[in-house]
Image (cartoon, rainbow, N blue to C red; front, side):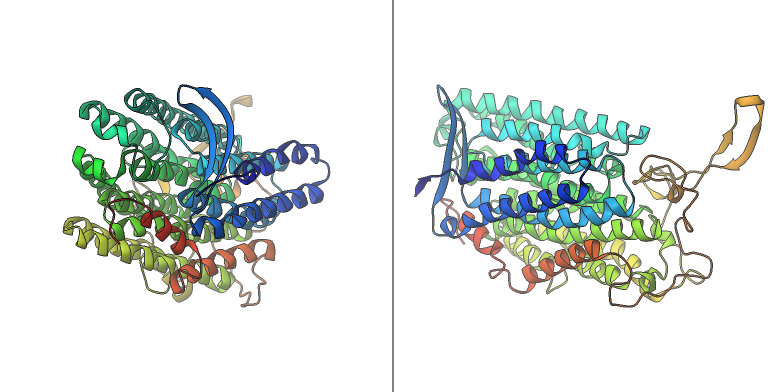
Length: 566
């Protein structure tokens, strides 16, 4: 049932209109953060108010502009859109609390710009979620790129600017491909409107042109989904502050690419036409290669955020693989992994950020025994890491169970095997972190992680500032030279400045980690609260997925597809 409603537009505007208000409050940071939290809560309430109706079959529609000839800007909150919109708005609220603790904990510069850019980014993400056609989706997809660029380059260092240029090059290139695919779909069908089961006119279009349209759209959205070989922007974008890495690179940006692929599979081409055109198998093959290759690369990363970045690349491909298998349970698993991965990966990034703020430690090889210093943080990390590996009672197990069952039911044993192998690799690159945090000491620990080299380790560019090599510093004034090494990256803040007033810069201090106990003394509750909230959401989705509502939304999406059996 179609219901005209202002709510889809209101969900976009509530954070968009907050941008000038946040910018005007630069001199009043407490009020600025209060406005951010109020707007985030309002957005969640608006999106959440549509969930009961969507579950009963209602679709909320806001017409913005009609250009004639089948072209229009329309917002539509259907089940798939609400899945992404509810996730983004919920986690923006959680991340807003975390951002206050993180940005103030590091005395970050440009905090007003940061919070304003966050509001713009989430407004764009909700526009992506509620886009009713390819044209509307494209507009907000590009706005998301523009609004997130200041967050990627927040540090204003050479490394951050280089990462930002690479981010724009990749994502705008993907946007051009999406626009080309959109124009080709319009040329073939006369419409770009999303239709459950696919646009009917595409089934009678020229198969070669239809395949070309699918290739353009899949490649364009695949950039932000970090499908190989268009993935390298994501690890480099980890130079951004950790809350940015968490929400935008575990939720909004990368999930917008995944969401775009879901739209073209389910609502533009449809599962039947994809099978007839033979485009599903190549997409599944790319996803399977990406999830395995990125897991192997993750094993070699010493910097924690870079390891999490390659883990993200792998986990995103689980979703693409589920969509490409075109089978009911696989589709459920793929779509359910959107919130499952978001909760777990956000927990992991939050933990990495708390470790950075409290101990200035970024490298896994410096974290032996850190469980004594940060017990709650590392416990939450362990929960999320277990879920990423598919351990029962955490969100990742439920979604991956559906994925494996779907692959087996569809006769795609090779893809089921790839999923299982990737789960083993997840254990291989997460377990050493948890083990050494609790069961080793700085004096007695193995070298973890594993191998330095071009693919990772100490030679990689370090997120949160600096690079991993020690190089001599040459003084040019007065021809005085010194062989003293450059400051370690833990001595460098986001602006690349040496912080001489810190008592400790990375790794355990002299005498080892001090013990903080399990009552929250390890950090502020502005950071610990969101960490524990995200970890709790991971457990809730793993233990009672239907009560957590996301599985019910996913079942509504897949159940409404013609020709898909559950």
